[in-house]
Image 1 (tube, rainbow, N blue to C red):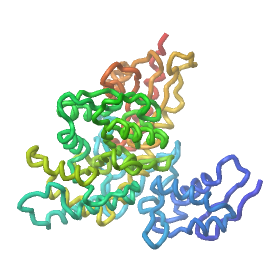
Image 2 (image 1 turned 30 degrees about the vertical axis):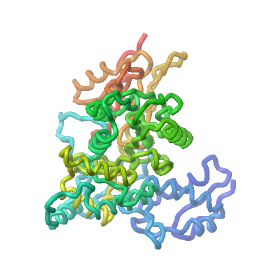
Image 3 (image 1 turned 135 degrees about the horizontal axis):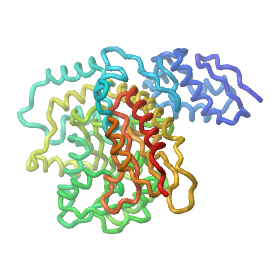
Image 4 (image 1 turned 30 degrees about the horizontal axis):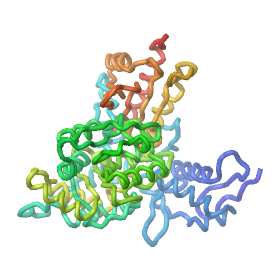
Length: 492
């Protein structure tokens, strides 16, 4: 076995060339361990990919791949013109793996540690694994106060700008360029109340009564409701483990709403090949694709895929929101489209009474301009990774027996590579409702997969949200759920 020398660049890394683990993965694992053990500290500058590759005696591609994965997970951050650094909030702590559940220490300013806060840790309190809810108690209180203090110093306008504050539109464009590689000019950005608000504005502009609008099946119930209220005939569009299936889409849709970064709720990540097929379908049919970039901020074992809009901006309208980054109570988001579409949507706002409160916009501008929002996202990425690891560890070994070709014959976890929830798919013939009822009696609230279907329910299971529940309670909930599932009799 050939082992490279330990790096002399401040990175305690060796590489086994003939080992069973790819060399890029070896580097990434050793880096995580070095950070969480305190060997590497937050803010410490790292060697360039070229320098580290030379020391280890490997190709630069190996090191670039490892760094790209660590960037995607939030362990690294780049500083323009300065290099690569250990991200704030990444150290110290414990390695994020299936068996790791350690809490992240407090950064500057008061944060409520895991195990306290939002969902009431008092004995006997109901534990809710509600999907789509972030850990609001993880917001740095000092950062929160500074943002609102800044907002309070800004005088109110005589009339709100229907496009949103110019400075905020510029900051959003910069954030999307950094975080998603999305080239958006400020004039292509509209400040919204969030995804549902942006979708409602778009539907008011482009949907006429009787138009057919596609929504993923299973999919986001609120999107169906918004489009139905706009007069659309909502068409369920099948998804599989990878996301929407472009080859099955009808040719008469006016609009298609999709969540390609982390399909809601099944969690598929739409492969690049399908993304190209999807934009090709839109060009051929004249449909508008509405890309809800749901959960793209929180990825764990995978690197980000390009946004649909970055692949074909002429057919894709992009939606984003702070509700998953921080809290649904914040009420800020954005829509990215062609300037002509942005002007049309802004012109509709007065008649619809749709506006985003200026203090919210000023606070969001401050969070973006200072980098506080992106630092918060990196901290939460590590926090959610620990909670996700607990659920995956507890539930991944469940087994309901052999497969006989008539559907899933074992419990299966879906969507665990990203986001704030996982789906536990139930075996064939095993409904989720008895488990939900039994869990409720024991103080655990669960959400069924069936509620996300508009038509016939073709899959049963649970959508397990871990974002809004403390780490300690996620651990207790996972153990309770595992015990319940093992105690429930299998179907005959």
